[in-house]
Image 1 (tube, rainbow over the protein chains, first blue to last red):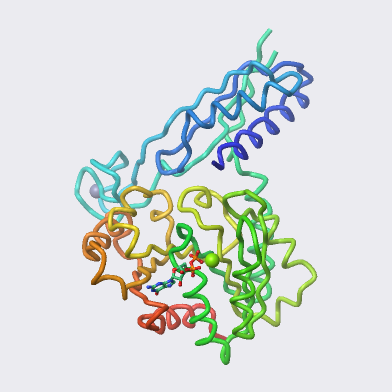
Image 2 (cartoon, rainbow over the protein chains, first blue to last red; image 1 turned 45 degrees about the vertical axis):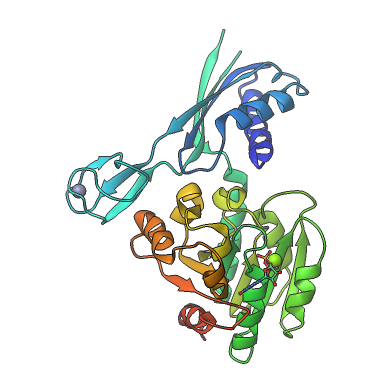
Length: 114
Length: 217
Ligand SMILES: Nc1nc2c(ncn2[C@@H]2O[C@H](COP(=O)(O)OP(=O)(O)O)[C@@H](O)[C@H]2O)c(=O)[nH]1
Ligand SMILES: [Mg+2]
Ligand SMILES: [Zn+2]
């Protein structure tokens, strides 16, 4: 259940950004979670709401979680895309010579303040 | 009036910053570090005891071992004569970079060759937490089922080496090493996989060689 710690980190960052922009309310926070980032979006949203409730300016803020699928970049044919299953293989030419382009990230994308 | 603030930054940025400091400290002192990750009870501490016995005459080592409670593991490791420090997380399911940095500050790191971090037993939560290590080593015991790499792709995708532990139990459990290897290779075609039994002291030497090649003086 590391989602609790992640939710706290997201709230801290949102609060700091709200202050830095001299605002007093956060309405929405957008995060992106790679499908290999081992984070459960529902757990994260639950923890976020529970912790936000006690924080001035953050209670009631909405957390939007977007899941970013695994994408690989092929070193042989240059293609970038989603493999057919969870594997590091180019979906176009079948090469295993790829790097993970996305799907491992855990990112705070943006927030809306008022 | 609502305003949109673009951040596009890692959620774990605070941890990442400390991890980078740890990495620099270790690099400057010429210390190689690996972070050992597995489910609880996969045999991390037992394997490390064997590894320390094997390497103690050659490499200067320090072990940091994370557990939710007790310093049992640090005591087991210290029997080898190598310094081992317990980090009790008190409930947290993974180690974070600040607790590693705290242990390193004020130490003469130049007098070390190898830092071993035994993470809290968990295949999920440690995944995204950089500790400043050079390598993540993921252990999977044959008693856990050969489909674990398929169920926990996040951590296996980041592994720099995989240990298949407790191989002495293979005759007693339905575990197909080739299937496990297939799942691991689907994510990482070239990752080294070491079958080991700490109990019978089999295969540990091959892993010790892999460490030596990286941490050797
Ligand atoms: N059969 C067998 N049991 C082992 C082996 N290594 C560890 N164990 C047992 O597995 C249990 C957990 O081991 P431990 O090293 O504490 O695992 P950790 O929680 O991953 O550090 C203990 O009861 C060990 O005796 C092994 O190679 N073979
Ligand atoms: Mg242990
Ligand atoms: Zn390709």
